[in-house]
Length: 474
Image 1 (tube, rainbow, N blue to C red):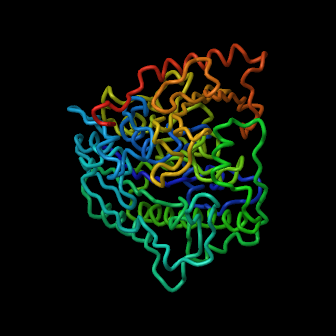
Image 2: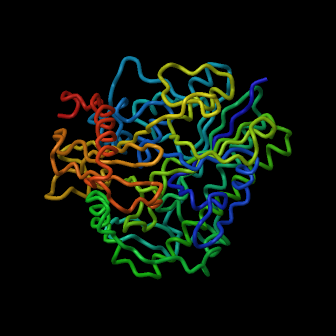
């Protein structure tokens, strides 16, 4: 009998927001997610394949890198950018839910609609979709905090006298699972704790961490890349009052505590109905959140707070409980891993690996973000944030090995950068000695061989990047 799969995905969730991963300043209140870790496997070195929603989710659901789908930014899922960034193809890639459905699984997604490349999304890869609760309106929210330069409310307090819209996500998912016969793949896609209305928790969660004296320092270390410095300059985060930074963090972690309560409702349903041991629980996020680290907020950088994501996989009674895995992995592994656990053959298209097969671990993993066109912006949907000299925002690619991270600009103003172009802005970090990856070691003689190897490997990976055809982009 094939197992069920419950996929819990959150938007912009840092690993340190979960108690099982640990936080340097306090203990996050996430008992239900911690239970999944205790009963399953916790991965400590999982990274997204693009530190922004649409390209990350497109890579994950197709098992293909951004360079293979031509999906480098959120433009790929916006009507007003179409057909500019849509890559039409006679044989579009298959998606995880489509492969499960072909094997007899019922598939459904609740909450945030699948934020993937527009033409893939329009094919409706899920058999059932219910988006109730994927937006929390800002008009009743009070005590809001905004990040300077972004024009976006980061967080606030949702009123106690109004029903919280996202409560419906778990309600609808549980009702669907209860009425489904045969094996199922059910995804609960939460928009939280993303900035805006999705980081506006109701009480008691809005005040849960009001007494925590969060670190309010916002610094831009001189050794970080120009890319990360430019993000900090655009946001002007250094001008935020300390009280706002402290409140912003309290809202963020309070929202995660609310998330955990919803996870508990799903676990309770599985236990109550006797489905717990026949259900794989897979928990992750599309990317993390800088939350002031390095002077940055939001995502769009390769610093670990934004690039690293939580990954918990539990199958009570089948997978080992309490295991901690430190091997390098990324979100592209999702398809082969879930399909492998369920005994469903994975299409050759899917990259990555099945995390529970005894196969060779990857030497490198890759990420990319940004189209690198003349009209490209740091925040493309808002139309703001340019590169130095008013140039278009670059495409930046990243490679990680077991110890090192290297990222650099690949394309600016529609042109791929030459090997010796200073605009490449190469950044090299030793993740073992510098856990926050703040120090740039590029150009250091002692790491010359390491840098050359990583640069060569990254250039090989990006050499065949899918670009927008001229007939579409003109």
